[in-house]
Image (cartoon, rainbow, N blue to C red; front, side, top):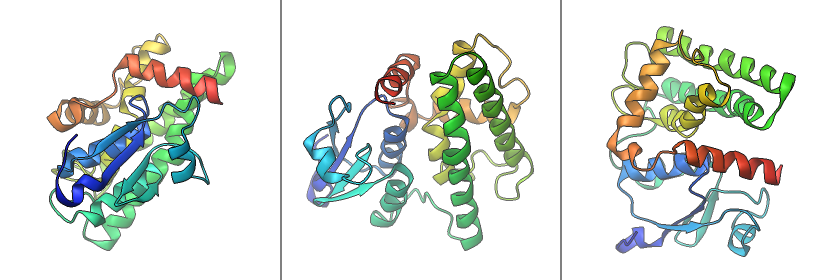
Length: 228
């Protein structure tokens, strides 16, 4: 995308199939930031990626004024701080901000690994990963139901999409794909709040146009299998 002024110096290195790149794209879209998207499908990894993220050698990487920022949720926090304009992605209250970071970490540390196990595992290993994924989703359902920070609100961020929403939105297509890939129609049946949240965020026009469909989920799974 073409931009002007300072925003001309914004580049995003990533792949369209990546749920972690999607997080950054959502944050940039919410903030209305124009950027150049540089495709890197990791097969092989580009010289720009190896130079920009020499430690982990993975996408996404945001390059702002020539300086790289790595790791999806760190990038989202950077976007919030570097572009201090609406919408506000992080709560202003220190406790609420800490709570948002806690749940974003839960998604990355618990939910993402279990989802990965469903899509890359087989047999008993896949079934165990599915059970762990459902258990993790139930925890998020209960957070939406009972947490003072989230209960009764449209999003984890309140009335607007926020930090935790972006973390979960990145993998929401994988959550929706659980039922299709595992031939089950009951994964989210007892999670009405989370189901409504997924429908709501996927219908947001800023998210809808860049969210992952099943074909991109399958592409992501294929890449995971190829590079694991």
